[in-house]
Amino acid sequence: MRKHKRQLRWLAFLAWITYVIYVQIYSFYIMEQDYDACNGGGLVAWVSAVILLYIMLFRLILPHIHHVRRLKRSICIRPFECCRVTCQYTLVRLATCAIVFVLIVMLTHQGRFVPSTHQCIALSGYFAIILIAYFLSVEPEKIDWRLVIKNLLIQIIIVYSMMIWTFGRVLLQCTAEKITVFFSFSKEAAAVVFSDQLPHMLAIELLCTLTLTGCYMHILYYLGILQSFFHKLGFILEMITGATAVEAICAALCTLCGGVEAAVVLEPYIVLLTMSELHTFIVSGFAFMTGVTLSLYMSLGIDQVNLMTANFATCSGVLALSKIVYPETDRSVTTYKDLKFLDRDEYNLVDAAVRGATAIIKVLVNVISGLIAMVSVVNMSNTFVGWVLENIGIPGMDIIGILSFISRPLIFLMGVEWQYSDKVARLFIIKTVKNENFAYRAFSKLQQTDPIPMREQAVTTALLYGYSNIAHIGVITALMTVLAPERRQDISITVMRAMFTSVLVNMLTASVIGALVTPHDLKLAQNVTNLNVSAHWTR
Image 1 (spheres, helix red, strand yellow):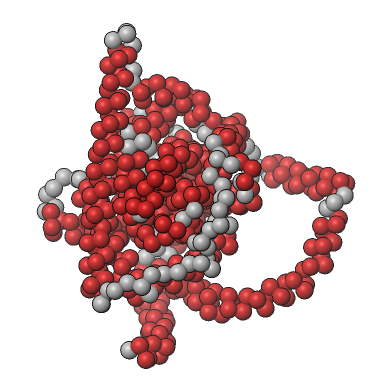
Image 2 (tube, helix red, strand yellow):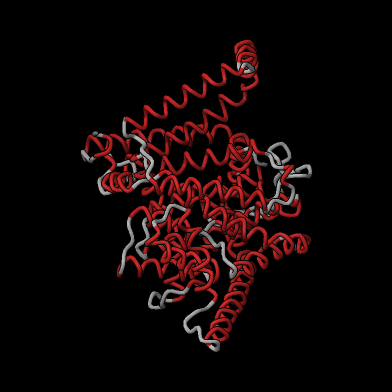
């Protein structure tokens, strides 16, 4: 089969094209179904379009990119040089600023974007978080502001396209449904092994989802698909974000499957990371959640689109703030050009699947033991402080109560109205001190008894997103030291700073949502998501 690899690829490609054409004919002409981009023929068409774009980009365009660059250089060098010389004059700069100001005023008077008081407050909170990150920076003079600003702009675009743009919101809801379906396969397997009568246990769900992820990752690695995908993804992300390939791939993988799974997949590169890259790597593990926890909180009634927006917007936020707090000072060996993949000794697909599943067990044991240890310590400390305060005449107060009172003004700066800021602040501190599981369950109960407005719900969902809490320090430390015991000291030094950075990342995402989103936008977008995709296309 290796001798006829090229012919087999062409045969598979032609078979896929034939299948796609037949599905379109069967769905829309024979069965006369409505067009739905999330199911049936519509989903097949969208997936095929993405695959064709991928093939065109990496087989036809990028191999000849040097010709495009040469043409661009010859055509554009004179106009750009002219613009550079022209912009040196103060009058030209003032005129440009005046034009931008007039455009903003025109948009404002047209009613497309009329910032409310709370949006302006959220904008001030956004800059306050960046300023806090700057003060926490290890070497502020080494910050690459071009990389930071680029990723901050990407985050704003992601939030706008997913929460305000109607088609983006529909697409995001579709993605959330498919993630839930993917992880449901592991739940069916768990029902066979453990019995479907067992109550919900996070350890069992983690075991099932991590086993499924490890199994598929090893299969894709054995087939060579994962290496090819990472190599090309690293090139694209490094070009777009400005971060190194492994940093960008780690953030993208955390977005898709979670920090634990991303660390397992990128295990060979952890020992090669610089201190700045290791900091970004650990921040990614804190700031994101796994797919199983996403589906779990969706089942509690947390808005799917708000959760998925926080998930995708966190990716750029991690790359921006982590490079402010810990700028790069060393030469990286994990860029796109340096990216190499290790050979593994799996014999066939079955061997790869079994090895991927069994490799997860050691990681899972360390994750669960670290989580149990840190949650126990946090609960004991919280109870002790409550007992001490009760003895001096302050009953009902503990660490969570004290920190909630202190953080209330900061939550107000995220764009939350003052009358709801005490509730949101308490949820945020529960998540930071204890666990996001406690916070989301409390949030779900709050929505049933005393609901807060839609805009505050979106901000709160972003604030509670991620594993950025004290209890998860044990999980990250145990996980990383198992995967890279040579970096134990570096991990121990970096982990606390990374946890605080991840808290800032979640607050930054919440501020962006608070600054951009209005109740009117959320109602409009929610009405669209209640309709099917075909209704959106007929408008």
